[in-house]
Length: 257
Ligand SMILES: [Zn+2]
Image (cartoon, rainbow, N blue to C red; front, side, top):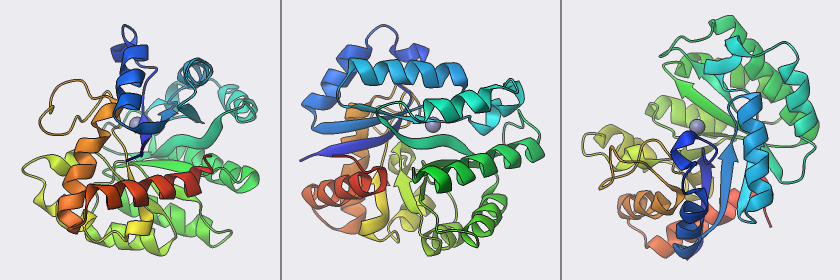
């Protein structure tokens, strides 16, 4: 079985000591590609270094909504330059976050739009972070979709059935992370089960949100299998089928070899 972890933060401090070991454990577990996601300009540069060290690591570059208020005016221009680097396969993460409230909403909306426009210009898919902002995210996606078809993914999806349906109708992929394995998240499991298999992706969001039985511990790309096992049960299909579908979806969306 082959897996693709479509969202991880391998450049974060949690991996400073043993990034190479974590990548190797993932490879040993059948993870054929990992998408390392940038959240600030510095983080994007670190992520690009990782793509040079590890053949299985690819990069998404962008500015996370929680960090846009700390961005220098020039940072976006540099992100646009970094997009041309080899192994950049996506834009983000971007989106809206009204949980932490680290950046004014207007500024988040502005940067979200920049990513969406850049996606349209470059053909690279965008990666959406959405926290306490489902309505606003859907509104902004709809606005963009009225101009051009969308090419993107809702990362670590944990929204309502309505939001899932709206995103699917807009042509988005939905990526499911470790939260779906948490005992309490029955609603998320019900929503996840409604995602058509050809729009489903899996991710870890490592080092965060480790699936059961590693909940609360550091997450790593090898654990993507545990989330996938939970999805196989939900869909009533084999793990092979989940692996086959999610891996070919990820290859299609990110144009991976
Ligand atoms: Zn993330």
